[in-house]
Structure formats: C-alpha cells, structure tokens
Image (cartoon, rainbow, N blue to C red; front, side, top):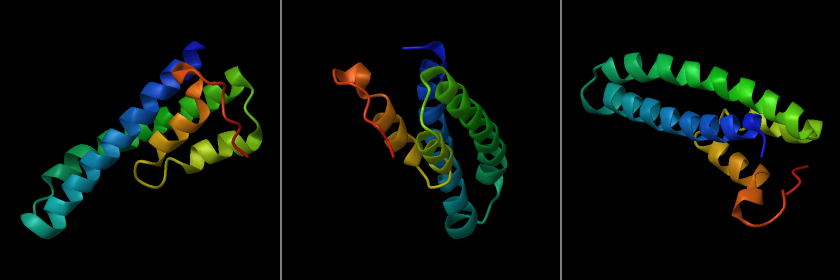
Length: 104
C-alpha cells in the first residue's frame, strides 16, 4: 500500500470524526443551549480536515491509478456525513484480505 493511500485512510476517518464534532456542535447551538462554541471550534477543524481529505483523495487516486469515476465518488463522499468511511472501506479492502473493489 502506498503512502498516499495510508494518508488517505487517515484523512477519511478524521473527516468523518470532524463531521460528527460539527454535527454535535450544531445540535448544541440550535437545540440545547443556543451557544455557538461547538460550531466555532469544530467548523474550522472540519474545514481544514475537509481540505486535507480532498488532497489525499487526489494523491491516492494518482498513486493507485483510480478511474475518474472512483476519485469523483471519493470527492463527492466528503459531502454527506460519514460517507468518507464508506468510501474508504470500498476502495481499500486489500488490507482486509481481499483485492480492491472497483467503484464505478
């Protein structure tokens, strides 16, 4: 496995975790205490991790020669919460004993 794919896997998990933090911050802001501190903290964190995720998708796509449909799906996966975990599992199953699953 290339270094680009290892970094991609880390970024995919970090992006999902930052999404959860931002969603929890939004729940507190709008439903619980009407305080913006969670969004003020996790908003920039999620934004930074999002950019890192996009860059690592592109690096992994180049290193592993993903089809355009695969790397586009990887980029789109950063929008819905926790979708990066699904995508990461979909494109890197080689670590779990089987070959890569083509995503079309």
